[in-house]
Image (cartoon, rainbow, N blue to C red; front, side):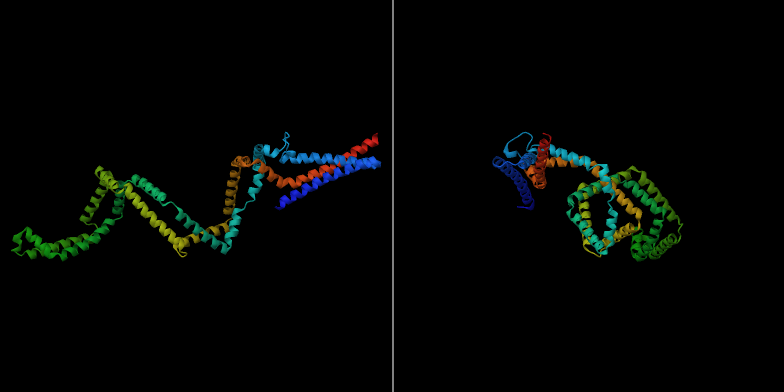
Length: 411
């Protein structure tokens, strides 16, 4: 038997014992009055008689809260069991109206100093290191628990939307135009010309054979000398292009590239080509495959980096947390903003859900078994209620004695 049950039983015995004592005293006074009546016996009898009435009245009142007195179903008894639902609704309304209102919530909310707690926590180097470790664990746990299929579906869906909205025609046109504007094509020409000269030098025989093949008569009249002169002329021509940044060939190539830029931007044929290119490469199956490989590699790299204490990612996390710590320690306005935001959030949340909390209390009480609820409440407050019985016995006796005394005095 637990302590509360023992205490309840003890105080019930005391209250009942006091009633029995009053009854014994009353019977004793009746017997003594018959054999040797004394005036003081009337006073004792009045006290004990009134005490019994008070004890019985308060026993009935206390018992009626939790059960039927003597098992008799007297109206308006067993109140807690019979009125359980109404009590739950009233309790829910009482809590909502008296505990979850602006006046009661605001003083407690304004005392919350979350930023101070955070600063005190992270200022301790040991706790700060523990926090960084826990953050890495949480991030790793989130990554491992994420539904890969859902992530791949999101990536592929968003990727498809982006690619569908992407204007390849305009993008390529602008890219080429940017390259031409920055003379990237000139650098490319300068890189290609030496290779072209080297190719000509290394393929003299092939060039000679091709010339003779086209004009056999040249082979009879010194074709090699003519070919060498031709090759020399080609190399000289390439040297001029390489050394002259304003060469006509360079200018012609630049002009042609500008024309191509405009053509790519406006020509419907180019548009069709790019559209066909997107349709060929941007299929649901391929996007799913690309997204799957992208996510698998990304997830694997992130998990590996989170597991490696010396990885760049973990170093970045630690650096970022240290910056936050420094900002919180040194910047009072930041701490004030954090607390203000927290206060506002909790305040609004509490007020917005005050009725819901009342409903939860009402529903919880309604779902309880009536007898079980009555027994629990009696166990919690029954001990104190027995003092009502004790006080009722004594107060009743005193009032009865007083009434008898006044009656004797005035008659």
